[in-house]
Length: 95
Image 1 (cartoon, rainbow, N blue to C red):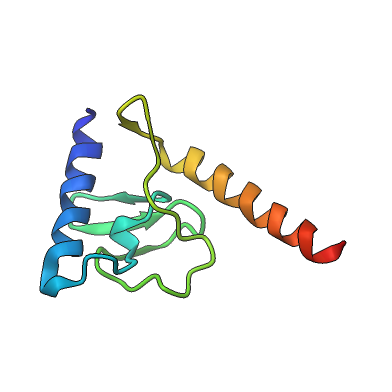
Image 2 (image 1 turned 90 degrees about the vertical axis):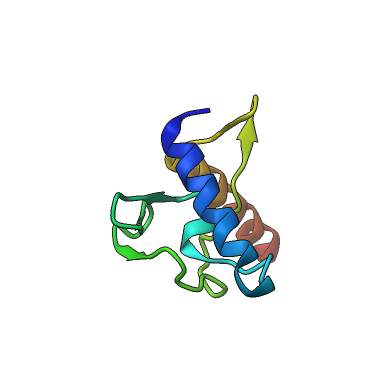
């Protein structure tokens, strides 16, 4: 496993187990974000930096990590999947 991915997964686990909030959606647990050295998250979609534990419950682009062959997909791949999912939902509503 890539060191960046290992650090990110570890940070995600710390956030999820903090205060018993295992399923809390945060920027640090989003597949589109990249964790920086100073424990911030760089959002690949919006090109902004947020705290690792910023609540992402209302973020339209939040996506859990997706693993392929025991490796996490990169943020760009997560973004493409989420955009396809949103397009698919939009098309269903227009028919």
